[in-house]
Image (cartoon, rainbow, N blue to C red):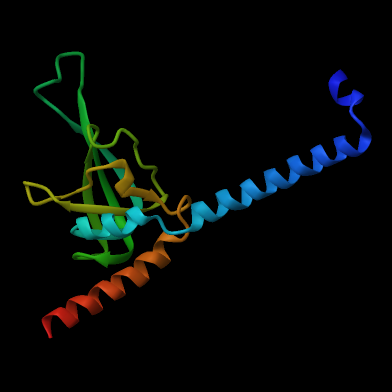
Length: 164
C-alpha cells in the first residue's frame, strides 16, 4: 500500500480505472461464454439416441450386490424418475426413467430441478446417460434449449433432404 501512495495520483486513477474496465470486460466475456452455444452440444446431440429436458421427480440408488456385504452397501449409480418437459430426439413420453453409473458421473442430480439429458439405450434396453457432460442443468446453460430447438429442426430438415 505504501508503494501505491508514492505513485502520482493520475497514475493511481488510471490503474484503478484500468482494473475496473478489465473486470467488467472479463465479466461480460464470461457471461457471453456461459450463454453461447458450446461446440460440444452438436456432438452430444449427434451421439445421443434421445435428448430431453426433464424435471427430476425422484432418485434411487442402484446397489451392486457383488460388492456389498453385511454392513457395507456399494452404490453403483443412480436411477432417476423424471417428467419430460421438452424433447428433441428419441421417443418422448410424459415420464421417463434413466440411470447413470457412478463410474460415468459421480454427481447426483437434484430433485425438483430441470436438466437436459443426452442419453442412449443400454444393453438391457433402458435409458442411460454416460457422462456428467450429458447431464446439463438448465440453470447453467440457459441457451441450450434454444440451440436444441434450432439444431433438431435443421437435423430433421437435412435428414428429409437426404431421403428425398
